[in-house]
Length: 255
Image 1: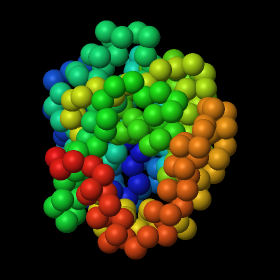
Image 2: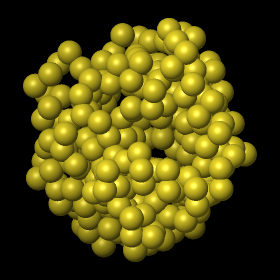
Image 3: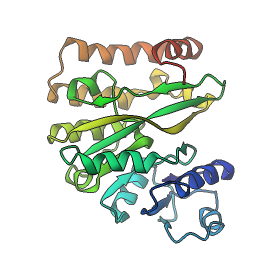
Image 4: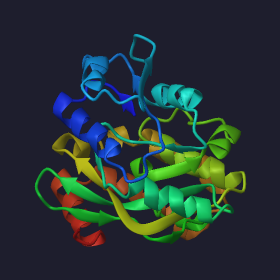
């Protein structure tokens, strides 16, 4: 977890969902990215030796915090969790268990239930292998529902410094290095989406996403259908928020 100013009640819910996992052999590493929330005090409430808090006493940004956490992680696998999401109890058992049975894959994701502030919950994710073309067409791992082999993460050098698209850049780097990605059918996460999250999908906030696509798509062998995805990103960024939310309702099934 990379923590920066999460409301304490949401942070506690997220931590508790990890501590409630049926797979108990893990460490929960929380990177304090200069948060005003007293992370150590909240962690002390649980008296659980599996939780470690690390940090550097200032705010360096989300990607820097993620890479700092990767550098301090001690496990064979790395799972990235948002501080305001809630994992299902079967998350680690399901996704890590699948990876253990399929050594030819480096990344596995579960599906997620998008919990919107307006109560319109959606089901995210398409099960199956996430190939180059699938990723370029928008079928990607769900970042806080994903487990990676630590060796693969370190082989590609961790996250690239792209705002709001660091995960897409990571999937592309892994694919370019020959790693395989998969999505299991299990729903393993409740993914919170707040009103302000929709405003971040405006074109003014999508510059890095478009730059990531323009950089990686030629390397991944994109064709016309894949480049159309870039056009879609630009068009959707120009749409009113209400229209964008309506389109998402039509594109994704209800949870």
